[in-house]
Image 1: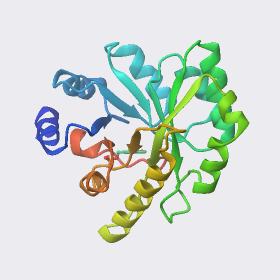
Image 2: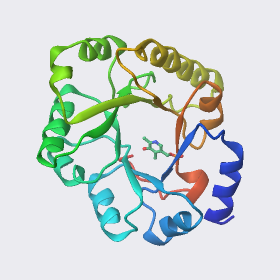
Image 3: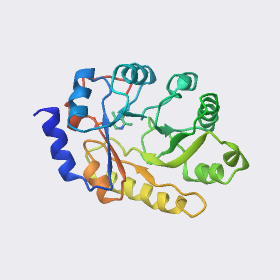
Image 4: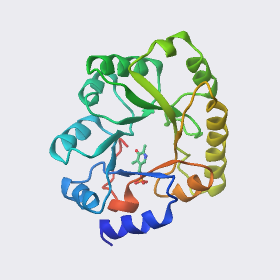
Length: 222
Ligand SMILES: *Cc1c(COP(=O)(O)O)cnc(C)c1O
């Protein structure tokens, strides 16, 4: 199957209100261009260095999303162009993104990553931490970031019931946060193995890598 074929099949499967982020981490520029030439314009990377390099070498109308754990000292490299950061997982990181947004004279769109999985390895905020932050004076004072939604990753398991429960929990929480006071509209959940469940549970943005580009070589730091 070609990348073009894979994408066409996926486009037919997902409702129009769901946005597809093509996760191109570890994949070469040629693969990204093939997806681009099939109409895909939103790409996600999980390492800032790779994101910056690809951004520099590929068409300028690509929207680049950062989906992986962010090291604070590297935010400055992506701040001039990143269009959405999915993986905001600490207050310190929010402050740094705001600072770099200010330096670049832009407002950077961010999602708060919520810890829904039971796995130790997953990063993210708890529900209480999110409400505490959104209601804080500090949140109002951060003028160079905009919280536009939530992101979550389900436990890495083949047990569909667990995945389903975790996505449902995140959607319920999303609806609780999404009040007239905090208008958020993006719920980023679903990857190649679980995006159909995620869409059924109310995802508005899915992040697909291997189902578009094929399997990646095994990398420990994903
Ligand atoms: C790698 C990655 C994806 C895509 O994973 P696939 O299983 O290849 O679709 C999605 N989200 C995040 C945060 C990732 O790191």
